[in-house]
Amino acid sequence: MQEYINLTDAQGARIGKSEKIFAHKKGLLHEAFSLFIFNNQKELLLQKRAIGKYHSGGLWTNTCCSHPRYEELLETAIHRRLLEEMGFDCQMQNIGHIVYTAPFDNGLQEHEFDYLFIGTYPASGNIHPDPLEVSDWRWISLEKAENDANSNPENYTEWFKIIISKHLLEKHI
Image (cartoon, rainbow, N blue to C red; front, side, top):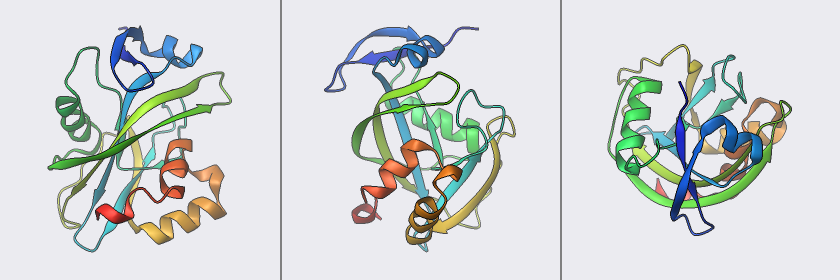
């Protein structure tokens, strides 16, 4: 089944659609989101992407990241994907966006207008990730996550390294 995503202009306005893999093959600017869920101790919930993902499989990253479906409301998409990937949902707040480009070894590339959201979920809460999406997860402080991403960059997704290195989360938790 083909999955269509929203193409955007440099300001994030939706300007059309593309099949997801085609957008990643051609490096077309498209809409995405990255969710960062913290517990009450201000630890970040990281996920390790399932090895079978179409890119960045086996790498650690933020709690959840994806694309709204073509014409899907962003607010609907963030809750849908958090529930699908991690097996829970929570309230989230938009804290801004980044635009980035990242090539991958398999010939695909990200060129995303990436909305950033944060939320809070208890460390003792039920987390039931989909094994087709997530192979592992852990709670970690931002400082430890940044230090590990700097020391072992090959273990983390490109977008996570960009976001954490720009310290875009600290002022919101």
